[in-house]
Image 1 (cartoon, helix red, strand yellow):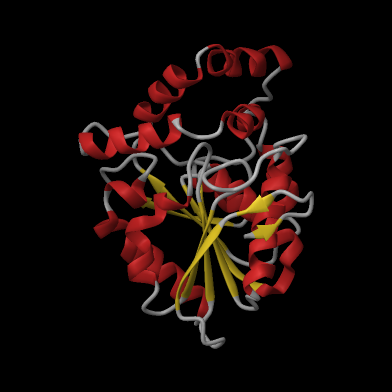
Image 2 (tube, rainbow, N blue to C red; image 1 turned 180 degrees about the horizontal axis):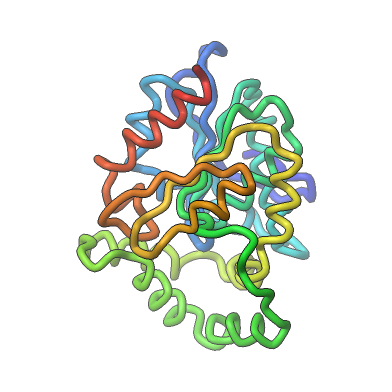
Length: 261
């Protein structure tokens, strides 16, 4: 366990090379996920890297009790794990909300970070209209009223039509089982993310690559305006790393190799 800045314990697993010479790849799940969502990447990446999978605060086996489950606090969780494993040469990979977390972490870690990978974190950046307080309340209300049913419905909506039903069931069950304190405390931050992310990106010098699905369009130009280079995968949904690892893993591997030379 690592300990985040506010004292919340952060669970993680360390895989592969720990000889001190291998770069470290930190894999960070998204909202209501956990570190097992990277199960189809770990074995491939450990051939070359020290790989660390993280449970963000309030998720998986990590601790709870945080006063405000905001996105910078999740960034602190990532920093705590990087410090705990003593990583000096790091790539940060974040799925969905985990992509927000790694940006805030990179802002603190400075030149130790060689690159960031977003996995369907944002498909546009800067052009989203601001949601009012009423909009945010309306968005989160169903999750508070019936967490299990709302999360199940939401999780299933994130997959492509041709996704393996057993995989869809597995991910939906995992998200429904997520600790509700952090899930409900953080979901409101899904809206109005663009301004704080843009501000944080301005303080990050490392390259940022976005691996996005083609389930809906990516606004390539809006991402590039903020230094994010998109790569589009075909025939997959939000969980591309689980849906089609044969397509996803070579793209991730090539991206990581470009960071470390």
